[in-house]
Amino acid sequence: MAESLKVLRRRVRSIKNIKQITRAMEMVSAAKLRRAQATLMAARPYAAKLQELLAHVASSSVIEEHPLFQPREGNRKTLVLFTADRGLAGSFNTNLIKKTEELLRGDPAAKWELVLVGRRGRDYFQRRSWPVARSWIGLVGQADDGLARELANYLLERFLRDETDQILLVYSSFISTVVYRPTVAQYLPLTPEALGIRLDEAGQAEARQEVDYILDPSADIVFDSLLPRYLSSKIYITLAEMATSEHSARMISMNNATKNCNDLQDSLQLRLNNARQAAITKELLDIVGGAEALKTG
Image (cartoon, rainbow, N blue to C red; front, side, top):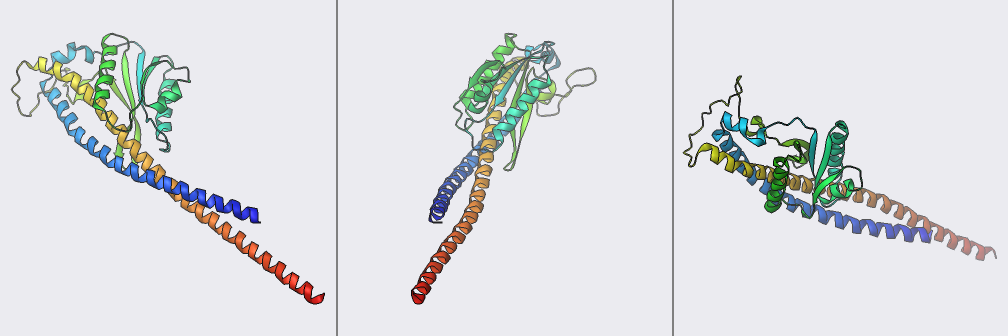
């Protein structure tokens, strides 16, 4: 019984220490979530305005002739998977990896290649048979403008060099603090609908009623100049969505872990109290028994 009490006390101390860690991690994730969400909310208007400007200056001839808008008949596909560098975020990384495997197995005839952003995805797929073109790690849970430009340029060059026919992004889309979903989005080739350009029945871009911009040089040159920035901003928004979703997932996971520690601590404390009462009762019975033996003796 004494050994049982010792073990139970040690377990209760361990649970208290773990609870302190999970509560601290929850508070840290909540602070990081606020910063990441502020970054995401600030970046969305810029991306939306850039898309609006591209849709305004785009013409049907530019869309038809631009190489980034040309659909390709090949089956070479590049899948860019975004995951976190760290764990302790519940099923956050697992759901993204599972979504990626569903896409890979769903089209076995395609010639897939992976571009992995994040340590968790890299560590998982480097032990599998799927070919990995390149990987990035060291995201530290925040959107990085330098990484966004580097990744966007890398993907753009691969597409323009005809090394791939289609590029897909798999990432976690942030909906709210408690809702974030694995999302699949086509990155290249671009479609008029992706820029918010409406086509009429003849396939021509519909006239827009927004403010008429004064453009110098021509609209086509402005369009060609803004398009790489749009692709870079799309990657940056994806990184911001990922960072916000990651901190939200980790905050919720640590909150659940803290609640589980409380429940486990209460259960162990009850067992400890019962064991201590049983030990005291046994000692009292031994004392009473000894006293009665002395009287009869």
